[in-house]
Length: 235
Ligand SMILES: *Cc1c(COP(=O)(O)O)cnc(C)c1O
Image (cartoon, rainbow, N blue to C red; front, side, top):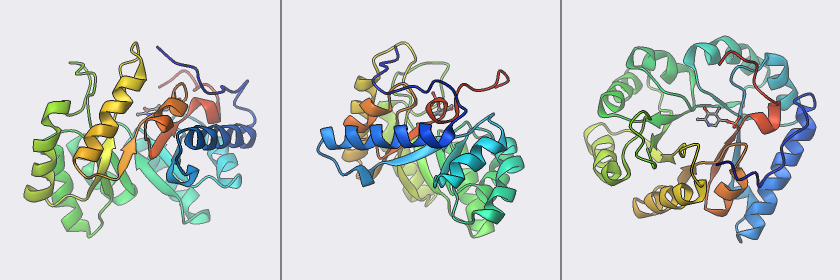
């Protein structure tokens, strides 16, 4: 269930206006929760969107972006980075071990660390490249069998493996709640897990529910449609 507590755009044609509306909704939700709006980072999710829309966002001052596919990000971002070297790029989609090399070279943050084999491959590749993108552990808060992520009750053990066995720079947790459930319960669970394990970063909330996510402690919200409009069909 989408809570629709946040404004949706009429169309994606005015990226700058949409961005401003999303930023102000984030600030309002933060203030309502007694939080500093500066403590929430907006990750603009430009997957499947044309580069022109990303450029419009960059012109409007947006620098943090999320992509869910390594190949697509590789096609779009190196040239954007020539003009905007301070772009911060997050991988928010599933990562296969055969793409780890490219992912470590391209992304500043990998939000979807979801299994020991991937943690090991990332650690080995980081050592090779001398580049250490921040890692978030993806948590399957809804325990959905088809969905990636570590079950909530196994997060502690997995974090321990990432830290002590692989020395991964784990900064936080991320989740994608089940589409048909009230997201607030999942957001509360993820915030609680992060707090319990001393992790400063909590990545949660998308176009339909980022206000709720901020009220429940999100430090990073991942917003696509509300900024760029509906995605073109192929996804
Ligand atoms: C696509 C995507 C988003 C953005 O979704 P919108 O509903 O368009 O804001 C956020 N997080 C992940 C993991 C995604 O794949």
